[in-house]
Image (tube, rainbow, N blue to C red; front, side):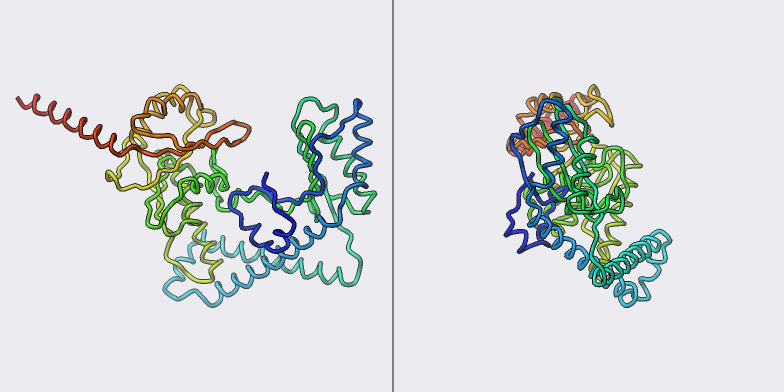
Length: 405
């Protein structure tokens, strides 16, 4: 969890929402590092009820109002861009592309939803001028730890009831204005107000697969590699294309190649690229002819790439849980690493065995669906690789000569 200072927030709301490696944003009301939980459930829940009236709500609610106002302005700006794009930008020789039923439906959906939401916001603002605002809210409890004598639902019920009594807000589990977060991890409690309606990690993906990587994590993996202009960046096991799509969005001065051996994965990646292109053109209010990205079906163990043509390889290798198996990974990982050079234990051992070709620079540990996963930043030993390739070439040449003789 990254903390942003109050002064930084008030000065740059739009900047905070543009952070690419953040899944969710919320403003902290109060944090308890070592909360004194009582012995019985009744006493703990009673403390939660009393806690609602003791928290410093004033400044966090000011931040929430600023954030809500910013989101409304951003939405209306987007609507104006959409209208200009649909009415003024499309030239006659490009209309055929947008007559494609899938593209046409996507554009009309984007514009229609935004127009409806803008109308609702205008109606709400006019109501606020004539009558006092009664907010709708809900409480979400995220709890981790085995030594709690209460459940998440019980904490949500009692804490939420106390908030309703304190503010006279209306409880609504679906159409709420304010989402109060009660995050409990062992003896630590963080109470906050959510500033994002949904996770920012789903920003570029519309067609999901069984193991779709979060866009925020894909951004972090790419940033570790420090891409430079004109770099060729390849994801040889792209799945739905989360890594190359994030790369094409944030590092548009590089070229990104998404590849996979599964035709369904390649189709999903291509659909996600098409959807991103449509949204990008609507956002910019003008037609562009493409993005620096392409999708291709190939075999990871036999890549159709010229030697030395790739600058960076970024990929999410299968864990052997939802896709593949740990047993297959023992053969897959070494083959992949060797091809890319021209379960954690398995990869670590493979990496150790390939130490003459790859050098581990940095390791970042991440949580993916409850799994403790590692992101490895590797550099290739170019001199040693050149020597090995020359040696293999000579051996192959010698075998060929022996056969001829």
